[in-house]
Length: 401
Image 1 (tube, rainbow, N blue to C red):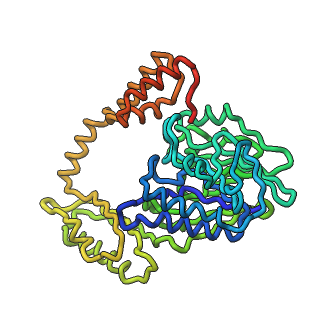
Image 2: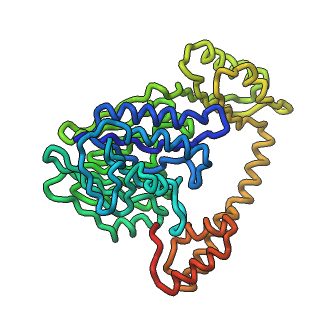
Image 3: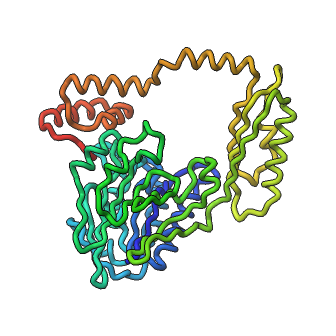
């Protein structure tokens, strides 16, 4: 059996900018290529770029994600342990989990749930779906994205175990230690369930394969880093007999990442060097406007100032992100002094989160995760927050979604 794995499409990313079509164009290419040879499609989270996509984004997303329904039947039978409309699996079945960009409070529907209600896919959260074709069985397990600090507990309590006699695939959407900076992750590779043929993790946009753990990356560049500039975007196909194949997307934009260091330079020196770099890119042939991240760092001479508009003027055929950290030595000292004064202070959000956690602990509250409750409060819905706390305190039931 062949399973296409298309992760982190971030539909709706860059809306209102020159890049607003990118996520749909690249997701559509990935799906069309996958449909040519795949029996089923897996979406490991962050299908959308926001928790509440605008109507225009949802409309475009549904057009793209209806392609598997219109495809020729792959002949796969699906048992997801719940009612699935016949038309959902009439072409090439799509199985998805929601990610961090889509996660909402327990009682609020997220956009992946909306797609499931429309019959476009099968959504899993601490559940599984069995795929069967020509006597072969593949079981797909899925845990949708949860707040990072709760991930070890949710995974431990769910405790998925592979089905004997079948190929077993587990989908997650979490940070994993060793693949992101340490403080961001609560799950380590040792915490992952054993004996799965393949564990697919979304969320992390850099591709990697480590034994049976696959980080499939994203289909779109959301941040131009040095690593992402070097690495082409695409999707994987898991062939249960032959392993993993990577398929590169043709519609992706060419990416450039450049760091320029200066020491006591004049504004003119900076401007001329940066514009020469951009002119060389502009002179090249590109199928689509390329993405350029240009970082200027170091020091300017005392009394000099840089007008960034003078650097980018005239380069309309390039999408430029200009990061200017140039400053005079005196200004840098002033900034350092301010940072030293602020280093022990917390942001308003961090402080609010800390206070909420402390108050909930004092009240012996074990309901909805504090991160989700904080989101409700951020949205100004105080009545809903109070109702949730009261109801879950009375029931004693935690909210894992």
